[in-house]
Length: 147
Image (cartoon, rainbow, N blue to C red; front, side, top):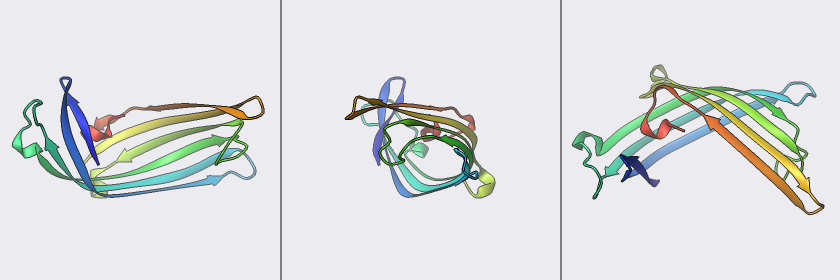
């Protein structure tokens, strides 16, 4: 993946190359609309910077090997009429991620998240879909860990 990171409004191109594994399990509580679960994220990569004409990057930051491992607890409310192509209903999910050096990762930080999806029929052929994603971080995240 190649993208830009901005320092003082000047782009620095970077490339992340490696392995990403993501797993999420959710279990419904009886016949209710509540779900609880857990997630795991594993990211092992090499990061290369190219400052080009932007601000100079210290040589020790031009190539960095990194590993990020996180676990999350999730709670969700689900009232959509269809998971794949909903025409009505809501999905709300709260997650609390913890990235930890004791799990053999390189970073220690928290990342609470909130995701809200709402679907509303507009006539017989159209659906209005609304989405809100909110996240913050606490601790010492890597530059790509910020929302």
